[in-house]
Length: 258
Length: 110
Image: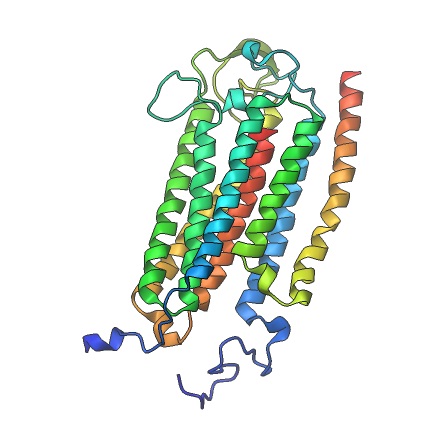
């Protein structure tokens, strides 16, 4: 890169802003990514705290776990709602699948941080390798979530007998299978609504993240960052990806553990 | 087009095994905390003590992700505080909404 660049705000020195210095010792892009993530922390925090608020407004299931039946009178026990794993039918495996999903996302966060570390060393081969692994992790996680949603929507074999007000304002008592926005076999309507909304919004973030990861993977592979002179883009997308992992850590605790 | 054009002109620095070891250590801590949460979910009785423990462990994990993986710990102090201090506002939201939720609980069921 030429040291005598004529364009305003372009400097051969990485990180220096248009004004010629480096506020908070961070580049413009990195600082703005941090501030975007701060706003996203507030968005997700609002959703998750709303979940807590609605949850405490319902009684918890009090009886023994072995006799649990879904009802819209009390909040369900998560380990009895999320107890299925793909390809194995009818096996009670509480939280195993979602635990696996959590490990996949943490693993993809680790490969991401390795990609960022390789970017600091200008090592294109390592960046491409670790970006690819991160991409694989992200896509696997999304696929797992698609299965999880599918299972949640279709529900268990037996369903649950519920008394509720249906779409045309009739009070009905019938066997409900799976979940929709009106009624679900696991617990109060809010339970499924919050599940769809919060994990859906998180999944949307992961989807955007996968697109960004692919973009960075491609640009790194064709040498765009070598010509640019630095691998800062890997760092910025890395921040976003770690944030997605961070949110999942909270979603995991609130939806699946508590 | 010359195929050589695509070759890096940047100085490739060799791997620093100490840094990679540190990343591995952080990953191990995150995996162990998640594993501990998993075990606690099945062995401990449900109740407020367990939920508080879960939240403490979750915030602990969040600290590792933010400070180590996102390198917030390596930034200058003003940047660290400009990210962490606004989060303090959320504690008020938690207090208010938990109170609101339990009031709704009392009105609805008693």
